[in-house]
Length: 262
Image 1 (tube, one colour):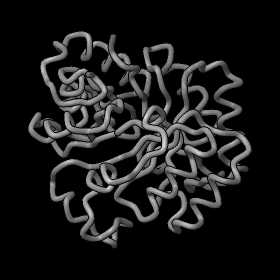
Image 2 (cartoon, rainbow, N blue to C red):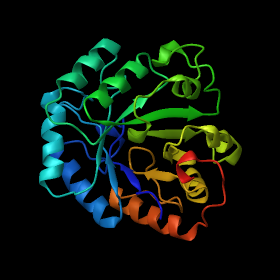
Image 3 (cartoon, one colour):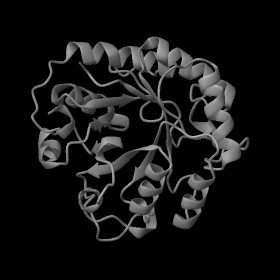
């Protein structure tokens, strides 16, 4: 049985990147319902203030989660807890500790400072953690200018992190390309589920790689705005429907790389 398909509803995109990208809580709820109806089993949503800024404020996160759940989406909701919403590591900790309404999971980028402490604080609050790591394309030397810890490879940081509960941790890996060699080393991970995703040109090839590896997959306007045939996507639901078809057409598992498929 395949892991549920995650849809990235809006990502870090701005309103100028197209009317199809949902920004307001009302548009996000509508997009979420349509994506779930098309086959999405999980929602990744970047909460935003009315002016469009990403935010971890409980006054922004809580109402959005309540709106999504109240509308009957019926699937887990993931919120990113990263530099895009709060640049200061101490500020991120303060924000997640102040949440009154909790997401099902929170994404923590292990290339960002304070990742281990933030992930631990989320687990302490009962929120499952998606540990996000890039793979390839020079990611072994993160730059502090991008909010990352210079000289510390994110996957190595994740492996060195003594997670208190691996049962509530998932590795979310972003390969730079759909190269099985990039994910081959993941078979040595702790026994955690793995989700693979790509952005823009890598999005569809990596989705097919995830299917071949038996890993979880992700698609959505937050990652890519075109369909497999190159046509512009009109909605998240259209991308999800195309992803469901791609996953069904891709043989699995032909890649012994992911810990979560063991």
